[in-house]
Image (cartoon, rainbow, N blue to C red; front, top):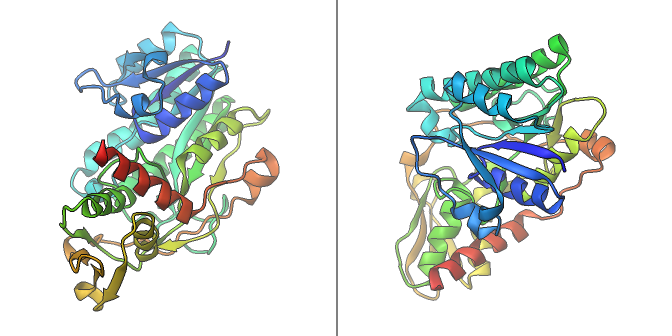
Length: 338
């Protein structure tokens, strides 16, 4: 039985990865922070809460990391823990740098010292591309992050490469483009949309307030992407891989997909900050723009080229953006009815 450690196991990706590994017969340990209440909601929703062993680890505290790595001979470690909300990274840039950047090197150094045979996965991100110099983006595209979150992730990415090249660790980074699910955090834009529209469909006619509706993202399903993570660590040679669908969708269209799944009939009008959508059936405003949600620096078009992952890993995304929006909206609507 293989043993895996997942940092951030209670998050979206950690929960889906835990379920995948458990289905494969792994013994799965997940980390939580000792000073926080473990949020088991996602693990429970996916039916694996009782099957994951939990340990106290804080990526800002080296001793807790060393204890976890020293105590068990893990075959695989997946570092998914992070401050993951890009928007708030401007408000707490030092914390983000510590956890998303230095937390990675703390983990890597613990592995180098106590368990060098362990295979390591680092959760990198398309936000590292930021002001992208090429479209689409692949493993060779230069990084130009546009947020403290993206900048910290660049450090985490390159220190992973450094430990692989300097110490021979089997350490891979997955440069993942946006991936969502019904257990996505409520502050993320896709879940904010589906939760808000589900409540609207239930009769709570409070409009969903959004920022730049023209922003486009390469959206996939988290359940597909965690399979890609696992495939990376099964390779004989560690490398870095982009995981993406290769298709971008404007936020406005994602709203439309979710609304259709809920039986809402949206009529758009206005432009820029005055743009809004009225539900024809109720006559109420369902969506409107609020400049407060604009980013201080918007990323350019992020569109991933996952050719390397397709050819070397045999990985292929299965869920489209429309199917994803329908899945999330329906789940939120059903949860609201329960």
